[in-house]
Length: 79
Image 1 (spheres, rainbow, N blue to C red):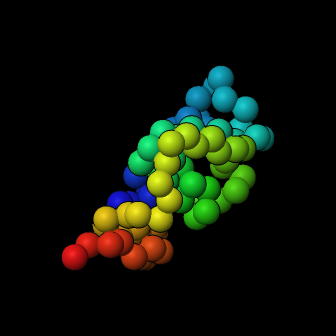
Image 2 (tube, rainbow, N blue to C red):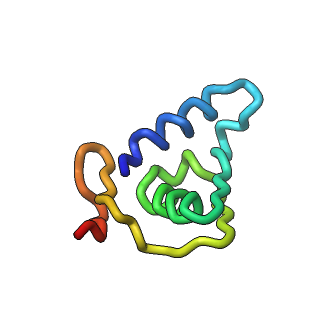
Image 3 (cartoon, rainbow, N blue to C red):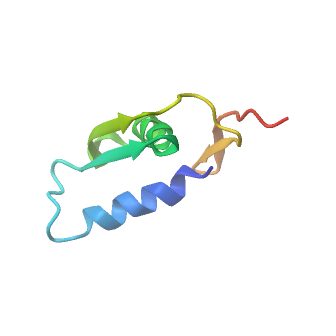
């Protein structure tokens, strides 16, 4: 899982005229998406994000390694 891909989406949102760039964007994730948005909140620059909402999520169960800026930041559970 490459967090750079998701950071590009956040950057896209921040470049929209309707988005308040001072406060960043809020993330909402369900199930696996909840795990992804919490991981984004842990590693992306805090000025890009204003909050995180998760529902029905199991945490820390990535099957693949998590990469950010070309480096592994979390190890997956691949067998």
